[in-house]
Image 1 (cartoon, protein in one colour):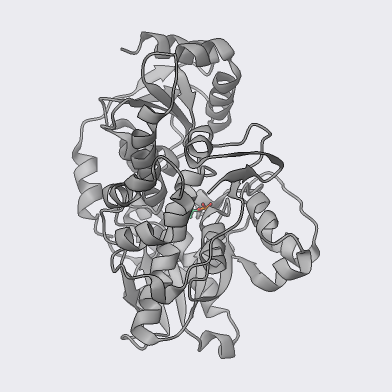
Image 2 (cartoon, protein in one colour):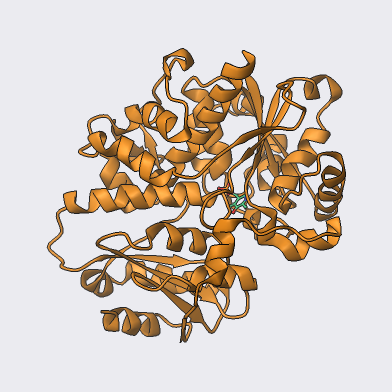
Length: 436
Ligand SMILES: *Cc1c(COP(=O)(O)O)cnc(C)c1O
């Protein structure tokens, strides 16, 4: 399979698309045509087995084709249960995507990307000596997932930049507890300063020559593909158990999770329909309502990992369904306010005995507000993070302590260290040069 930028240009192979992240013209990589897969042809049971089958057409013709099974096994080695909430009647289930090392669904994408890049690296000719250096600016979740996923990978090192005093204590722990090939830089500035430093580093030709700089952000095809796999797996598990197609409610911000589900449907998986849940950042629902694409600055909400005012993956979605009327028929999106998130967390703790993180709560709010006739159809709601990651929000609402999952607890026991740096490219460059 070959991949093109959403803005056109030359075709590249899977490895180039993944190693570049963003296409040179600023577009996002998409396959030349999505494959069609017959659900009954998929034999695998586990997520890793299903991923290896469903993603095979995307790896076809790549030098990594024979490695796909190993990549899937290596990356997707934690449980992703589809848990019924209705005693098994097949009407409502939650897909728990948060059992990875940093307790959020970003572990799925980051771990697959890391496993893929580690195997791609020896196949990429480069006259520059030394390791690949991944730069990540983070306001919380992404940095932890990327650091965890790349920790201990051969030939790759990770520099995480985060704004001093602006991430939660648990998030900071997840960014600073690695050592080895992962270093955390505490920037005396804002998240925007961190991001500006990373962007400046990527356009600095001299710095790029000295270090092989690359990104691992969420628009990378290597993060999107495994997300297609879990939406595929969930719909197949549902179909095998109940014989029906299922609707999927997907909390999303940058539209990564939402687009992955629409790709899973487009390749033929038994997904009846896709409904997106967003927070008070309403760019996507406003667009679907009016046809006007109006990106705007993000607003802060309780579901902070979805605070996106200019969702990048809309470019991939419009490429998938260019006609606006068709797009509108294929996707729905509903905004959920902070107050509604709080109410939903309280309500479902009583109703199901389950505590949602604020992102997951947007999905359940949307479920509860579907018209009665549609609510009686089968649905899966995606749970994107463990509530223990958002204990300071969730615990006062439900009035009890949230138990910390073992993987996260283990990580919170680790020693931490971070290097303070000034919010300037020069300071970052000096640290990279000194890093042995
Ligand atoms: C990143 C994130 C999201 C949103 O993911 P998209 O890729 O923007 O759809 C939702 N929930 C959690 C917990 C996240 O970390």
